[in-house]
Length: 149
Image (cartoon, rainbow, N blue to C red; front, side, top):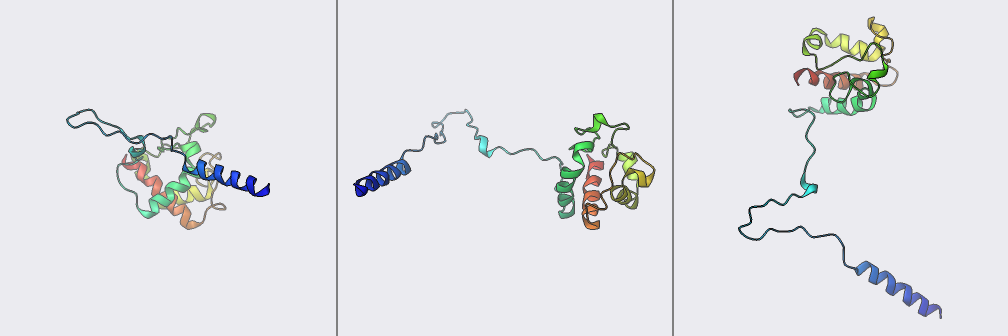
């Protein structure tokens, strides 16, 4: 009896593993057909920036997405999810005139010590305890890419 149950279960497993896949195969248009077949898996998400990011900038992009984008926005325009709850609103990093006037040291001090450390909004948190000096440099490198958008 145990042997028959085992054989029945084994047959079910084998048959279910060999069952035909219900996914549709890509359709190939007939010869001479001018319509386009679009494969959604082949479509790519457009890049945020036109230029390719360096290693430092790409590391900064990851950190920026985790810590900064919620207020400063994904495009650095100061329009993140929390921006509307803050007064004053977060800095717009795409304002190239303002950002070019800031030295790297000023940007690093602002990220490390928060807004209060540079006589700006105390709502900007200090990340000097959260991020290493190298990580703060990565974030700065990524923020600098917004100047050229």
